[in-house]
Length: 133
Image 1 (cartoon, helix red, strand yellow):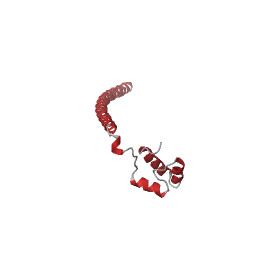
Image 2 (cartoon, helix red, strand yellow; image 1 turned 45 degrees about the vertical axis):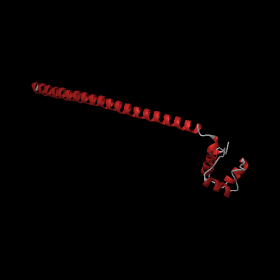
Image 3 (cartoon, helix red, strand yellow; image 1 turned 60 degrees about the vertical axis):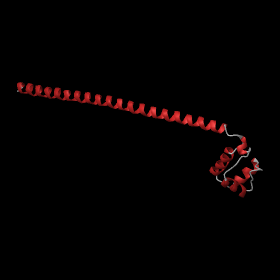
Image 4 (cartoon, helix red, strand yellow; image 1 turned 180 degrees about the vertical axis):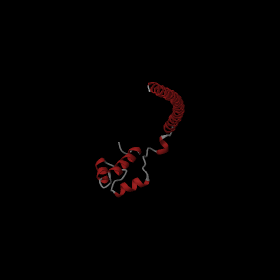
Protein backbone atom coordinates (compact mmCIF):
# COMPACT_ATOMS: atom_id res chain seq x y z
CA UNK A 1 0.00 0.00 0.00
CA UNK A 2 2.79 2.38 0.93
CA UNK A 3 4.56 1.59 -2.31
CA UNK A 4 1.40 2.28 -4.28
CA UNK A 5 1.04 5.70 -2.62
CA UNK A 6 4.65 6.51 -3.40
CA UNK A 7 4.05 5.63 -7.06
CA UNK A 8 0.90 7.79 -7.19
CA UNK A 9 2.70 10.66 -5.49
CA UNK A 10 5.62 10.34 -7.93
CA UNK A 11 3.24 10.38 -10.89
CA UNK A 12 1.46 13.41 -9.47
CA UNK A 13 4.75 15.27 -8.99
CA UNK A 14 5.75 14.35 -12.54
CA UNK A 15 2.44 15.76 -13.92
CA UNK A 16 2.92 18.94 -11.87
CA UNK A 17 6.43 19.41 -13.24
CA UNK A 18 5.16 18.93 -16.79
CA UNK A 19 2.38 21.49 -16.21
CA UNK A 20 4.87 23.96 -14.75
CA UNK A 21 7.06 23.55 -17.85
CA UNK A 22 4.08 24.25 -20.12
CA UNK A 23 3.20 27.35 -18.08
CA UNK A 24 6.76 28.64 -18.36
CA UNK A 25 6.63 28.23 -22.15
CA UNK A 26 3.32 30.08 -22.30
CA UNK A 27 4.72 32.95 -20.23
CA UNK A 28 7.75 33.20 -22.55
CA UNK A 29 5.49 33.32 -25.64
CA UNK A 30 3.34 36.02 -24.04
CA UNK A 31 6.43 38.08 -23.17
CA UNK A 32 7.62 37.84 -26.79
CA UNK A 33 4.21 38.92 -28.07
CA UNK A 34 4.21 41.88 -25.68
CA UNK A 35 7.64 42.97 -26.91
CA UNK A 36 6.46 42.72 -30.53
CA UNK A 37 3.32 44.73 -29.71
CA UNK A 38 5.35 47.42 -27.94
CA UNK A 39 7.69 47.67 -30.92
CA UNK A 40 4.70 48.01 -33.28
CA UNK A 41 3.19 50.73 -31.11
CA UNK A 42 6.51 52.58 -31.12
CA UNK A 43 6.70 52.46 -34.94
CA UNK A 44 3.08 53.64 -35.28
CA UNK A 45 3.65 56.45 -32.80
CA UNK A 46 6.77 57.60 -34.63
CA UNK A 47 4.89 57.59 -37.95
CA UNK A 48 1.99 59.60 -36.50
CA UNK A 49 4.39 62.06 -34.85
CA UNK A 50 6.24 62.58 -38.13
CA UNK A 51 2.95 63.11 -40.00
CA UNK A 52 1.72 65.62 -37.43
CA UNK A 53 5.05 67.46 -37.56
CA UNK A 54 4.80 67.71 -41.35
CA UNK A 55 1.25 69.03 -41.12
CA UNK A 56 2.26 71.58 -38.50
CA UNK A 57 5.14 72.84 -40.63
CA UNK A 58 2.82 73.11 -43.66
CA UNK A 59 0.17 74.95 -41.64
CA UNK A 60 2.73 77.38 -40.22
CA UNK A 61 4.08 78.04 -43.71
CA UNK A 62 0.56 78.70 -45.00
CA UNK A 63 -0.16 81.06 -42.10
CA UNK A 64 3.04 82.96 -42.82
CA UNK A 65 2.11 83.22 -46.52
CA UNK A 66 -1.37 84.47 -45.68
CA UNK A 67 -0.02 87.04 -43.22
CA UNK A 68 2.47 88.25 -45.80
CA UNK A 69 -0.26 88.45 -48.45
CA UNK A 70 -2.56 90.37 -46.09
CA UNK A 71 0.21 92.79 -45.19
CA UNK A 72 0.94 93.50 -48.84
CA UNK A 73 -2.65 94.48 -49.76
CA UNK A 74 -2.61 98.25 -50.21
CA UNK A 75 -5.27 100.26 -48.43
CA UNK A 76 -6.31 101.75 -51.78
CA UNK A 77 -7.84 98.40 -52.67
CA UNK A 78 -10.41 98.69 -49.87
CA UNK A 79 -10.39 102.50 -49.70
CA UNK A 80 -10.46 102.10 -45.95
CA UNK A 81 -13.99 100.67 -46.25
CA UNK A 82 -15.09 97.95 -43.94
CA UNK A 83 -17.69 95.58 -45.31
CA UNK A 84 -20.08 92.96 -44.03
CA UNK A 85 -21.76 90.14 -45.90
CA UNK A 86 -25.03 91.18 -47.52
CA UNK A 87 -27.09 88.87 -45.29
CA UNK A 88 -25.61 90.40 -42.16
CA UNK A 89 -26.22 93.96 -43.40
CA UNK A 90 -29.82 93.07 -44.30
CA UNK A 91 -30.47 91.46 -40.93
CA UNK A 92 -29.11 94.51 -39.11
CA UNK A 93 -31.14 96.85 -41.34
CA UNK A 94 -34.31 94.94 -40.45
CA UNK A 95 -33.49 95.61 -36.81
CA UNK A 96 -33.00 99.31 -37.51
CA UNK A 97 -29.20 99.35 -37.30
CA UNK A 98 -27.15 100.72 -40.20
CA UNK A 99 -23.46 100.06 -40.61
CA UNK A 100 -22.74 103.80 -40.78
CA UNK A 101 -24.39 104.61 -37.46
CA UNK A 102 -23.57 101.58 -35.36
CA UNK A 103 -23.53 102.24 -31.64
CA UNK A 104 -23.09 99.67 -28.91
CA UNK A 105 -26.47 100.42 -27.34
CA UNK A 106 -28.32 100.31 -30.66
CA UNK A 107 -26.61 97.07 -31.60
CA UNK A 108 -27.47 95.39 -28.31
CA UNK A 109 -31.08 96.58 -28.57
CA UNK A 110 -31.31 95.28 -32.12
CA UNK A 111 -29.95 91.87 -31.17
CA UNK A 112 -32.28 91.29 -28.21
CA UNK A 113 -34.70 89.22 -30.32
CA UNK A 114 -31.91 86.84 -31.42
CA UNK A 115 -30.73 83.78 -29.57
CA UNK A 116 -27.45 83.92 -27.67
CA UNK A 117 -25.66 81.93 -30.39
CA UNK A 118 -26.96 84.26 -33.10
CA UNK A 119 -25.85 87.32 -31.11
CA UNK A 120 -22.37 85.88 -30.77
CA UNK A 121 -22.28 85.12 -34.50
CA UNK A 122 -23.35 88.67 -35.41
CA UNK A 123 -20.84 90.27 -33.07
CA UNK A 124 -18.08 87.96 -34.28
CA UNK A 125 -18.83 88.89 -37.88
CA UNK A 126 -18.79 92.60 -36.99
CA UNK A 127 -15.46 92.16 -35.21
CA UNK A 128 -13.97 90.34 -38.20
CA UNK A 129 -15.11 93.17 -40.44
CA UNK A 130 -13.48 95.66 -38.09
CA UNK A 131 -16.73 97.43 -37.30
CA UNK A 132 -16.85 96.47 -33.64
CA UNK A 133 -13.99 97.05 -31.23
